[in-house]
Image 1 (cartoon, helix red, strand yellow):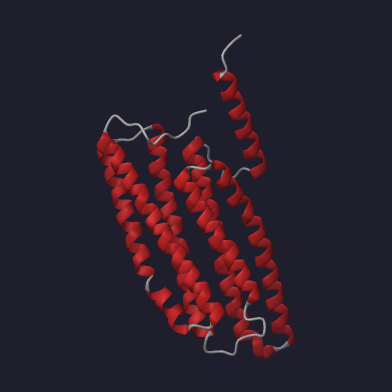
Image 2: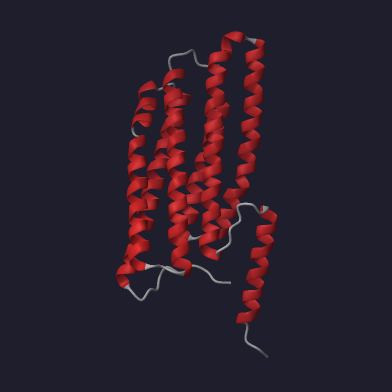
Length: 250
């Protein structure tokens, strides 16, 4: 099975172009990670100014997306990449779209955090949101790490985590509805909590998308509408076939 190899190109400058754009993606990813952590901290600690700062900094994410997209367009126009290199560029364009959307969700959490900071904090200090936020933040980090190392196994682990996020999201939504029914005074805050966990669930979806692009880069396989069990089985079969083909004949 063909795999991506970024280390050898006829043109050294082409290789530098690819490495530069990959580094920019990881820089954008690092900034988005930081924004997400700050947004969750602002909510949990009731820090209105930090929440506002996160929301106001979202334009930096947008600018990074535009700059990387323009760089990819230039490479496509001037280098005419093929095979693994073309997959890399396509995956980068998709990845920065998901990173930009993670930034949008972080902006939303920042705004809500600044509003919730003016209300009385619940006794549990948003414990469930803190936990879900940690899980989602780790998904984003691990997806970017898999992107950096072209690590398919790590990418698959990230994709599997999305189910955990969905389950926690649904549990917090049910809990919030129960609170609103029992005490109408909690409706405003409960609705904001529901918007936050919805944003976190979407961020988990985007992290899963990025992990799927890693598999596409390495194996040229689009797994968006394939079950993860089937993907893992096909990849194992492909690895065994490649190993058998490489083995010396008796």
